Structures are given as structure tokens and as C-alpha cells.
Image 1 (cartoon, rainbow, N blue to C red):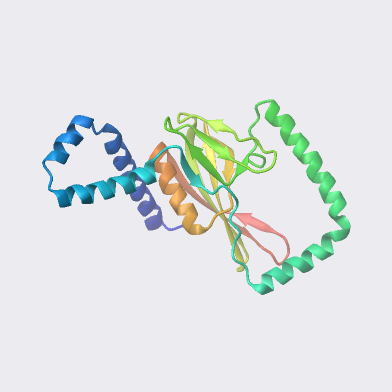
Image 2: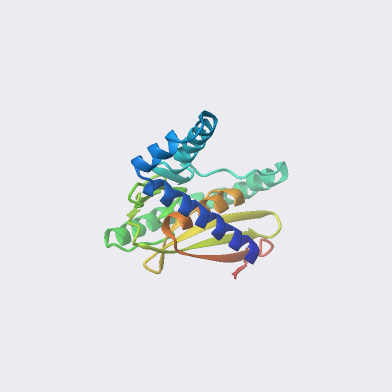
Length: 222
């Protein structure tokens, strides 16, 4: 993502944070005084605007998706995927056993308070009024919770698979360590999520890109 795009996200985040703070700091007396001095048309316009703002900034606030959003794929990509799965059919039992052992290893780590971002992957966050947040997960992955003071930075990570496919991740750093990973959303979703997260937590934002060479299975990062 270019520097201008990053600056635009940070600007939007700052404006959203200011709007939330102004809304929280507005006293009932000041609100009533201001309302009584307005015309009916202005009052109606402000009520409509406040209702919209309340819907956007109400808590608990969902940032992301409850479920992974499936990317749009061409018929050619779908056919290639089916053929690839057919070739892998004989080794599916071994892949299942490997995944089973891996999940057990992840669970043992988590029981020892080790946060592994390869395990703690979710499609979004549910943010509460005190700005603590819960990771939205599927299956048996724990819905890990963290406090406002725990989060130290966010990394917007782009994964490019050749020229055919691009995925996005938001990597949540807790106490300077990449602990949680958000996945399963579009480019537009990721920008909206970054804007809201930086607004709420006012933390450092980084951008990284990873290139995966689909021709020979290799890859690289940047």
C-alpha cells in the first residue's frame, strides 16, 4: 500500500476517533441547551445524523465479519481447485492426521499461555465499551480476549499468489508480539477495519507484503 493510502487511512482513523471522543464527552446539559436553540429543520437533521453515528459507534462493535468471506473466483480457478483436490485425494488421510496433531500441539501451547498467531486466527473482533476485544473464531479455536492496554501495533499484511489471487491479513500485536491474526476479508474490508482499529486503539500501523510464486511453490516476503 502506498504512503498516500496509508496517510489517508490514518487521517480517517483520527477523524473517527475525534468523533467518538466528542460524542462521549458531550454532557446532557450542553446537548439539551444546543437542541433548544436550533430550528426544527436543524434538529431533525442532527437527530438523523446522531442516529447514524450511534449505529456506527455503538458497542459492542463488530470489526470484521462473523464468518470468513469467500472471495469471488472465476470458473477456471474453480476447475483448477477441483483438479488439485482430486490429485491430493490419496494423501488426505495423512493431511488429516497431521492437522490433528498440530491442533493438539496448539492447544497445549495455549494452555501454557503461549499465544500462537497460527492458531489464534479469527474473522474479526467484538469490541466492548471499555475497548477490550474478543477474537471471533470458528471451530474449537479459543475466542481470546485482550484489554485496550495490551495492543501495541497493527500490521496490514498482503499476500499475493502470483497474478491470480490476493489475500489480506491484519496482524494484531500484543505487547510488541504478533499474537492474533484476522483473515477472510476483501481489500475494502481490510481498509475499513484498519481505520476503526487505529481509531479505537491509537496504535502504530505497519504494512507488509508477501509474494508467493505459484509456479514452483516458492515464496517471499517484504
